[in-house]
Image 1 (cartoon, rainbow, N blue to C red):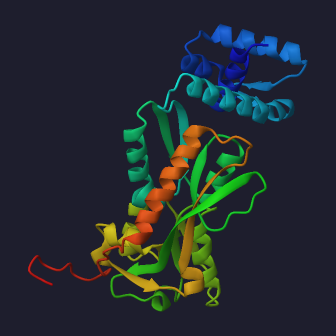
Image 2 (cartoon, rainbow, N blue to C red; image 1 turned 30 degrees about the horizontal axis):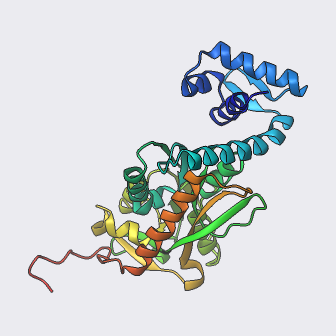
Image 3 (cartoon, rainbow, N blue to C red; image 1 turned 180 degrees about the horizontal axis):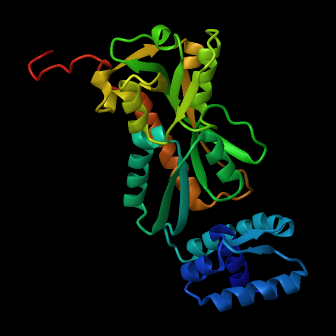
Amino acid sequence: MELRDLEIFYTVARTGSMTGAAKQLGFVQSHITGRIRLLEKELQQLLFDRLKTGVVLTAEGKKLYPYVESLLVQWNETRNALLKQDELFGALRIGSLETTAALHTASWIAKFHQKNPSVEISLQTGTSKALLQGVVDRTLDIALIAGSVAHVELDFKALVVEELVIITPLNRTPVDMLAGTPVIVTFREGCTYRRALEKWVANRGVTLFKTMESASIDTILQLVAGGLGISIMPLSVLARSTWRKELTAHPMDIADGLVTTHAIWRRRPHVPRVISSFLEQLSEDSALARSVDAVRVPIGAQEPSAGDD
């Protein structure tokens, strides 16, 4: 067994593909396949299940993965220290809520990329539930999710607190919107905001007639502005939206209306430097975001002219 074999195993596991690993490492696919077979023969264990769409780790492969990851992290950081290389290399797979991506994540990633141009960064958006599972399954390195975190395999860091509001069409109230055939327009199942809205509606004794789903912030706001239902969104998202003049924001109770965005990552003895560096920047940027009061345009109101105070 050679260190290169462990790197091949690690890359195949991360990409879920022999072809993808070959492309990333600069080998032909037959070389990758052959080295994996030799590794499986030496360990006397099948490490991957071969599927039509790629490969997935077997139970034994999942046992091996964290040890290989820890070894490679320590080796790469040792090599960088000996070579006195301060520049970060590698890949960073980030997951984010759609709303967090619009408000914060994009600028945080851009800033990190400027400092670390050799790091290959990818961004995937989804619900809190899906993103958390992505970190657990090792398809994501870091995820930015809403709400509390309780998982034995994960560490977390609180970043920013968002104020949630119920949104309706302009000059409409949640009460009259929920009368008759109440409809909510929201993100897919597994969204923390959606659960908060469903709880808010249920606490008022209302039985939903229909739930309309979308992965797009703009689509949700447009549907609400068109009178199809009510929704829930961070107030700061509405303040930046082109639809804000056609919507009305309604505050929630403090207990339900404040949601903390957390960064989550896998708990391990040695956190890769590329991950720890991004976490350090998140701490700095989120502290800055908390220290600056956001300038909010009243939802549904006219924007002040240049001459107004």
